[in-house]
Image (cartoon, rainbow, N blue to C red):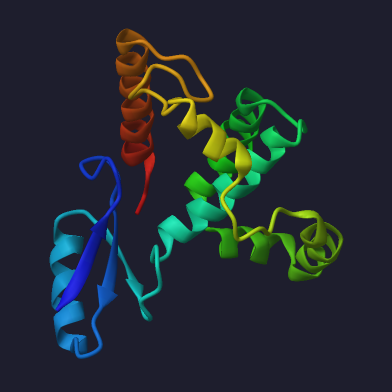
Length: 175
């Protein structure tokens, strides 16, 4: 038995996390990965099952810090999104985090980490801002309001724009 965890939208995102069970054979994992590769997917093997696997854990760390920045008045949601979209988000579309920092140099990463990590959000609790938004019914597109205001036309248009960007990335992607 194993888990094949796709990312949304699965018809545009090629990643599939493969989570092996305690008794899943190497042959089973390789057979599933081979099939996925033939389908144009990029499997990533989760060697040890943890809540959220790999992708959701990384996203949770990002959203925790992003909400903290907004909650503490450091930046607006729009400006946080701008930094992600036009900064490291584009870089991450081209190379993984370990590739990027291998190129930058781990001595530089270490110096930044020593300075920055003590100041990052590290709470194991949900951000009060998120609790407050949900309590007010600000659920995003579902209710017409989250960090942004949404009407059905705007939501549909934004989803189409995101899909077009993902298609463009896929068309330019070498692997």
